[in-house]
Structure formats: C-alpha cells, structure tokens
Image (cartoon, rainbow, N blue to C red; front, side, top):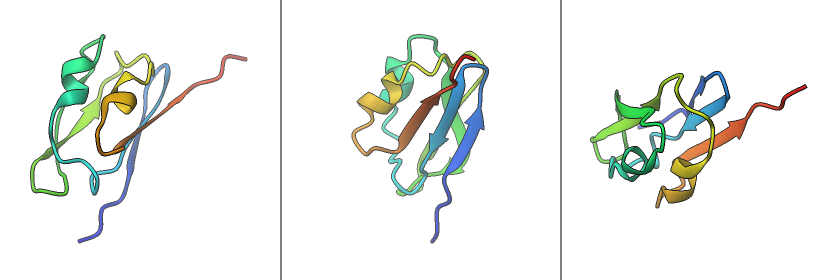
Amino acid sequence: MEFQPSTQETEKGFFTLFPGLCKGCGLCIEKCPKKSLDWSNVLGVYGTPSVRANNDCIACGICQNVCPDCAIHIEKKVKH
C-alpha cells in the first residue's frame, strides 16, 4: 500500500502528514496548545486513523516535535 503525504494550508503555515508513518498514537492531539488537531478519515500505517489540522493551527511545531514517528512536518509561513 502506498501512502502519499497530504499537506493542509492553514492561515499560519503548512501542516504535512505522512500517513505511512502515523500510527495513530494521538500524542500530537494531546500536546497541541490550540487544540487544532483531530482524527481524520485517512488511515495510517496500522489501519488506525491519522490526524488533520484545522485553521486554528498556529504552526508552532509542537506536534512535529512530539511525534515519535516523524509523521508530521510543519512549515511556518514567512511574513513579508
């Protein structure tokens, strides 16, 4: 099975999830200071739900840092 990364653009940045690495542990959801992460309909590597962000995401990167499987990549938008 092939897992394509999915990138969501939010107001503050870009949230990229790699479903092939996400095991659905929920650490990112638990640690998000804005509560902007939730379960998605996309299944991860073990058949468990992966996560998605909403527009409350401030691209702080905490989810990326706590993910034990490096399944999340955050890119903050640059202010011009």
